[in-house]
Length: 294
Image (cartoon, rainbow, N blue to C red):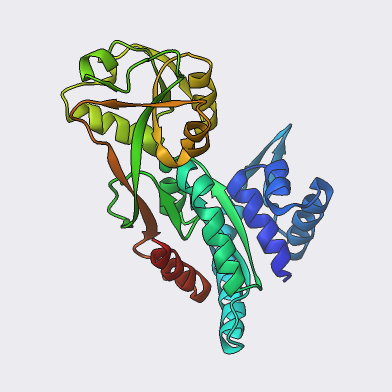
C-alpha cells in the first residue's frame, strides 16, 4: 500500500473535498482522484460517494481514516528516528497560530529554526484562536500558538510571551493622547470576529471595568487584523489591537495610539498541545526552541 495514497485519502476525508485536498497537498485534482481510485481498487472498497459537487465518506472510509493516521504518523516517526540517528531534523513541520503570533512572531522563529535545522520545511496554518484550539483538540495540529487561553480539559496551555493591547485610531478622529473610559465608550469601535484572541481579551478587559460590548457603539466586526486596521485608517472608529500589529503604522503616523486612564491592557500568547499526544521528536525540538525564543 502506497503511503502517498493514504496521505491523499486522509486529506480528502478531513476536508470533505477533493478541491481542498488539492490545495492543501499542492496536487492537481486529477492526481487526487487517481490516488483515491487506486486506493479504492486496492482495497476493493468504495471510500467516497460523489453527490454532485459534494462527497460523502462511506462507512469503510470512516474505519480507514483513523488507521491511516496511525500509519502516517508511524512513517513520519520512522523518518524522524532516522533523522535523529543522523543528528539532523528533517521533514515538514505543520504549526498552527492565531493571527498575531502567526503573522508577527512565527516567521522570525521559523527562520531561526531553519538556520539551525536546514533540512526542515514548514507549513504555518493561520486562523483565529478558537480555530487553532479546535484543530489541536481534533488532532489536526500538534502545536498551536494562540492569543487567548481557552479552557479545555484536553489541552495543555503554556504561556509563551507577553503582548500589549492598545487603542488605536486615525489621528483626525481623536485629538487627545489620554482619555477617560467614559469618553472612549462614546466613540464607535471596530472589532475582530468572535473566536479571535484579541476580541476575547478585549471583552475581558472591558468586563473588568464593568463594561460589555453592548455598552459600546460598534462600527463594524471584521475578520482579520489587517481589515480592522484599514477600517480604522479610514476613520470608521477606534480599535483595540496588539502593539505588534501596528508598529509600522504608529511609526509613520498613519495610526495614533490613545491611552485610556487607569487601564493597562496586557495579555499572554500560549503554546497549545494535546495532553494525550506524544510529540514526535522533531516537534519536541521545535516546541523547546519556541519556548526558548520567548
